[in-house]
Image (cartoon, rainbow, N blue to C red; front, side, top):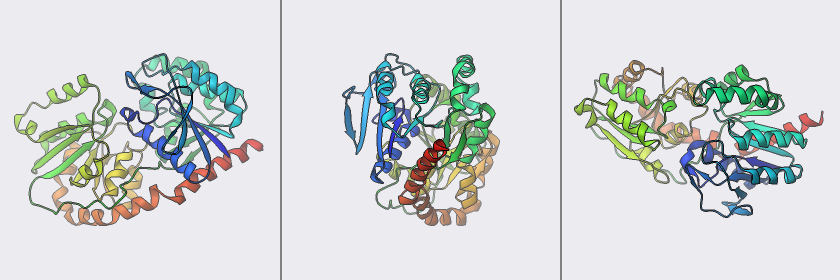
Length: 381
């Protein structure tokens, strides 16, 4: 079986956060399992371009990747060269797996693949949620959806990483089918030792790309009514104007002194995660939440909103706490942390093993391979 994965940005474009790295992990794991996987992508790296060879296949951590130049510098990522190559090579593949929506790489690639008669799998990665539809370029999205998107999506096999996402998708379109399989998540290669428990303030961590939907503004507002001693580390980057707006929203000097803006973390993130008592992610919309798995992989409990795709997983396995997307709910949960010392200790011990079993290894590989096989069987009916 041969699969072509198409995504507007691929590593080393880590600026785009979780989805880019999740797709890379998927492709690497599928190749490792013996399923031939290639990637078509662009040189997108924010407003810059990746310093990579273009229009020719290169090996990126075991995956054959072709980077194509884009001619727009925004989130449309228009790449005529990629589309031309897809038109030429589409029928070489048994399935074409497209990641994310609302950019010209995804929408036009979908149209080409369907025109060539190749089954299309779409992993929206949060882009078909009600929140996504109602934020940023809403008018353009509705026009694209009405003229082309709805017809294309109805012919796709949809893959979601958490069941919650499928509910939103069915509000937008009725695809051929929807299948839920979680992300592969990069986990620490060795056990990360947690620091010895010490007296002092509870160490809170917000670790994500800093943008409106992540709910960092909710956490900052919640700090005004946190009554237990605390310190917050904010790790991540984003639009500097928005970050400065968030910093300015904290007007109490006593609270400002308890916040560390740590900036972007990458390979040393597991050490950072292990050094904190609680990861806080009160997102307005999160189709999965890789950082939740990364945090639990080193035993750090999580406080996440109901809008995070992994909320039911965390609740069912008793690996943290679930909050609403408002400051009072977040501060109430943090204030009660001192009552949960026994639960925190249990999570620190049991979480790493649970996470490794569910989000890495051959069992998850086989779920994706079986999914691809099921798609081909469906198409033959």
